[in-house]
Image (cartoon, rainbow, N blue to C red; front, side):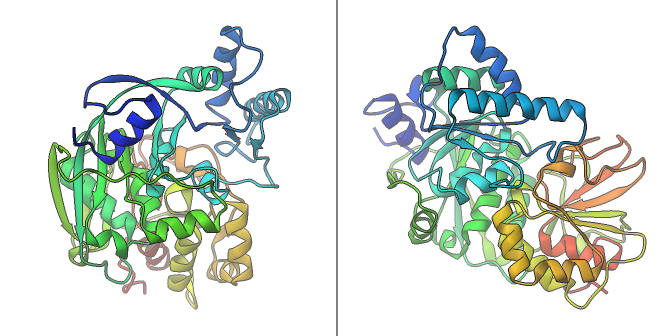
Length: 421
């Protein structure tokens, strides 16, 4: 039987020669991930299983990133719970704030903890980010995380797939964020419900790894079980540079079945903005109109990587944030923060009038470091713009790329990167 890339990974981890869409399989896990919101719940469930030890202390990653640095007493207690459990269990991959800290979905690839062919679950919906590396990665609930920590395996319903055929190369100031917003705008927030979004075609080669991370990260916003890219030279180079274990490279069979194929010419894409209150409510930058803004957030597990910092700095250099606009820049990991410092990017941001934060999810989930008041508008490089996502239920979030976000901060309204002034 011909299989998709995702189906091949699931078959290998289930110890089967083949799997079929819709089939239930029990598969072994290469990594189980949790953060400071989801892990305390998982720890409580883990205790109920009667297990003294996790299945493998090297195959669990715990990352305090959502409400950190701790914003209040409850956040501090959640982190203390996770920190205590990590110490008790001897968890190798626990990442403390200020040491090896970072937003989980940027940090784990950076640390080489995920490689091609892996099967990863995380108690966070954007775990699908690691599909950029050719891994099957998906979000689960805290109870499933607990079961994974205890048993080292869990069950899956094998997904069917949509093939995204990419051609061409994106133009300047158009990147992965524009691609995934365009795709979600085409198929809707449930257009790939419980399916695998499998990216293919000659256009993949023109996408950087950071572009691919941004695209895979938001596969969940189309309802997908996961998003996954082929493992090419760029992916292999990234894995080698970050010290990942040797990859297992899987490729879709020529006769693999897909629910549908969507063709996208990357050269035809324009900077794209998702209007409130869904990632599918998209318009190209020339369709936006005159929309004044109050805040800009550049960062998150979607667009907080070094290339995103460079793009934003390119737009900010020699310019100022518009009066009345708050611009918050959040490098996704400590390593990215230091690299941005060494390259002089933080100086550019500060001189432009931005606030630069330590790595945190913070404003993305309405946690801290950028909450919106009633009636305020924000352009964000984050991944969701639901009602109340970043603060008051009568605030608005517009999703965009770092280039559009920076240009908007300078213009005081949603603006194209070549129209900042």
